[in-house]
Length: 419
Image (cartoon, rainbow, N blue to C red; front, side):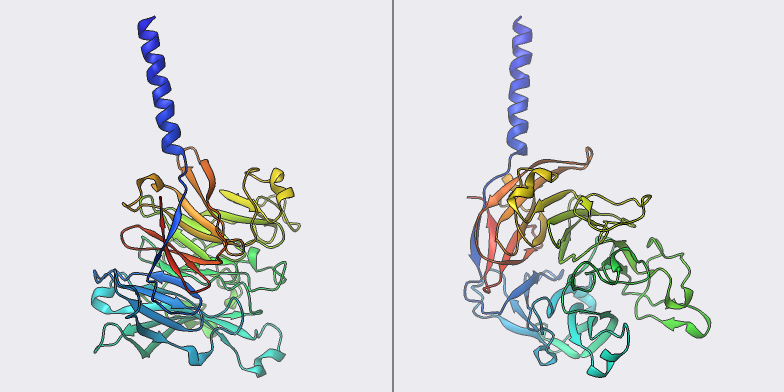
């Protein structure tokens, strides 16, 4: 009996420890760079050069460089294309920056911004009025805190039919390739069917190689690309059909508006916050070749008719736009929201209680949630609200130490901390 009692006590202790390990802590927001002045920050990152600098992207077209541990009052203007007027609507603008893995030696970085096309292009079918631009630049040879705007090399221009659903993030993955998140082109209900069409770059996660060059098509339709195509991209062996075939740049598809995504720095998992339309917001674990359902599905349920044999990848997490829908969701106890902002799996050192928690939020309501995910069991083991606050969250950010930040529309940047 003593041995049984001892084993039972050990089991209770183990279960208690597991419950503690799986629980989610409450968080608070600590202001950083309180003296920094930038309009509508939408992105922040550090270059892999050991300088500790932070680069903060303003949607209107400006990037400021801020020293680590500074108040932000001494920020310098690194990049400015406001004269190109990239921010002509709520979801357009200068939306992100990505530093080449070899930035220390080559000084290369990449930006995503939007432009209006000339009015003469609006009269012909599918000659869309807007475009998204992915460009390469170099830092100034004279000043590492300045960009050389004359060095621009345009990699990709994507025609856009409407002024919303641009996606907006570019980032280098653990594999060294540049990933590009693109929305379905806008309006409502994906009117061009971009989500399920592999002949368009819209509604996709793209993956390209900035270090090589490739060609597409053949014969009279052969064209040079300003980038290479990774050999293991899922549609790389599909025929071109004169530019009408599956696009070889595609990594995954069926995404409505993948505004923000990130890799777990420990596991390499790619997490995407995909903004919903009528009823549901979702977080997806994106893998090569995956079809995430839009516009046949929104979240984990049907939205439009689609092929009965199609295989869609379910979201890992979803939440409703209205409280009365919650019982129908994958997680009936999840509180509602209106526009998901994808975040990061916390791998920092300052707050051990957050270790392994994927942090995400909602733009409209400001709520910040989190969940833990068991990769072996393929399921969420704990989830819940981390903080109820009201500021509009435009983006999350992660520094090179694994600490996570929240950027808000009023121009503030906060460290996510555990009290």
